[in-house]
Image (tube, rainbow, N blue to C red):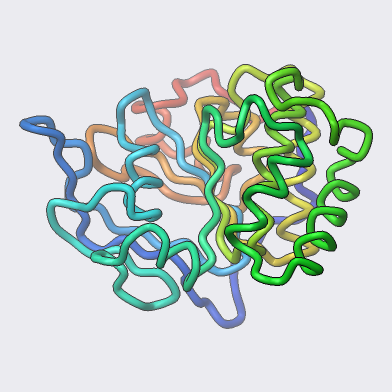
Length: 258
């Protein structure tokens, strides 16, 4: 697949991080998942996370959203320590949106009613709710599907719906968990274009984790490789695939972006 991104943010005039993990460790019972990791995601950046199954990518998302707490270390959003902040406060005060790998919508509600239900939680003004829903229906070309129950939508249509639901609150940060999984090539390309357009047009900071390495690297500015609880490499896609540690732990010798 051709490179989707026409530009990549390689440097920032005024580097300003919006998400930071400082000396974060996490264990499930006796199993160490994250071992004193440190990394930052800059404002308006598309950031990718790669690594084998069970390495802790989804756990990092759960730490950022507040679903779980680290054994040690700090989670910072916009420079503020939010390690002890509950989920709703991180969503409301810091505008963090989350697109889960599975679900994220009400099966038996229509596409429009899904949007309406969530809008009533995150948008106070009824008029603003209507405007925002109509905007997202148009933006994602979902108008002709709005009266169909979510359970009858295709995989790509469901993914569009969940992203639209996450954008109702106009987040500054959007977390996408395994967004390319089990989708066909054309749908993946559509999602890549949506992700890049969100960055270009709305300046949303986006973080993606996925097993589809080529698809992820086609639309991120920076990516990191996790292995055995550690960050072993972090760089632009073109540099990352050449990194010896990344090759040994994840890509292998024959992997190429194109």
